[in-house]
Amino acid sequence: MYRLLVILAAVLVAVTMALSLAHALELPGKMRLDKDTYLAVQKIYYPGFTIGGIAEPLGIIALVALLALTPYASTRFWWTLAALLALTATHAIYWFVTHPVNLVWTKELPLTGIGATFFSLFAGEVRGDRSRLRDIWEYSHVARSVLATLSFVFLLIAVTA
Image (tube, rainbow, N blue to C red; front, side):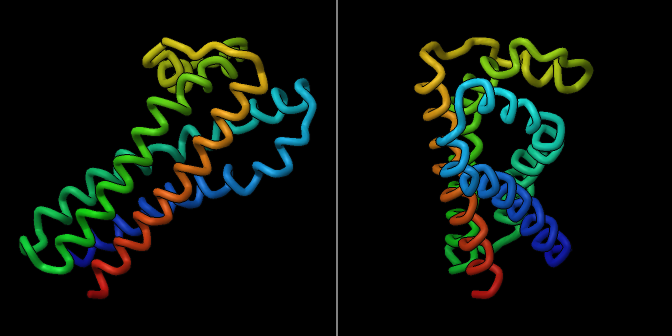
């Protein structure tokens, strides 16, 4: 059971890392786009990244379960806790920084089903010109990719300690 949970947690954290890292690696090219092209490119993300995004909360749950099965005060416990904290911070940045900008980008998209429900959550939005919103969105993904990568590394250290 423990081994299966380790594998599940590693896959979920790796998916979170991969998605956030993909966004971060696009930053140099996307910062050169004009307004219309940038907004057009933004709209291609939502179907796939919304589906893949389920890895974040599931990863947090898996890490909590893994932490509960890990002996307290062991090296593995503290590295697993570090992985959990980094992944939780990654997720918090999404909801408090990235998601409000997503609401602006998706406002005019004809969303239905799960996508419509998801993007109606926490319906407040940030204000500002396109450049400010772009910078918030792009740099929030850089921060998320750093934290998600740290979470993955911490988990690897925990399971190999």
